[in-house]
Image (cartoon, rainbow, N blue to C red):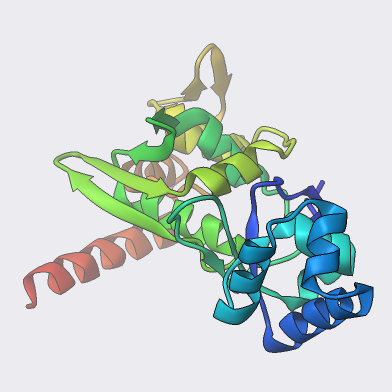
Amino acid sequence: MSLGFSDLPEETRVRLSQEGERELWHRINEFGGIKTFSKAFNYSPTKMYNWKNKGSYVPIELVRKVMGNNASEQVTAYKGKGRSKPVENPVFPLPENNELLTRIDCSVNLSKGTPIYQANDRGQIERFQELLNLYGDVPHKVYNRGSVHELRYSKHMHKILQKMDYTEHLAAQIDEKGTIKENSIEIGQKKLNPSEFEGQLHHTEKRLKLALLKDDKETVRKIMVEQAEKVEKTFGK
């Protein structure tokens, strides 16, 4: 199930297109102007003048109240409270993605409220970035902590993603928590036959082990080329 504009948390603030801003303040003027509107709906008139004159992010509840729940076409960015960085070029409705939500459940921990995705393979980080970008230009930072890679994204985006239901994604579970053995793929107490698994892995070592077990020469060759290209890029050879 996807999430619509009407499902975003109340603390969300949005930036509107020029057309959207004109429509928002035009409707408020038709209501009787900022003073009348702010009194009727218990907004600070000072804040409303600032939102209008400075082209600021405005509370989503104001936009929904004035323009309805179908105003997402006019939203060019959204963010949470404070100085959090916005999601630019947002996608509405927000798609439910089983793979991303499974990876979050397996490998994201909160540090003072900030979600941190941790992985021991760069391929997992790159895949997590790809999945985040299904929602627009989602701000995030990647850190290398020795053998562990970290990707941090906004508390607000995490809160939105946590509102979604999902079905566990098998390949993501294997990437995050599984083990590739000689004759089986193991996740907790579950054992799978490698020859029967058709999913796509992104953990480089697990992907290579699986390809070798399945005698998938093309995938092995592709992984070797990818790793050679990464080394060349790193050392500039």
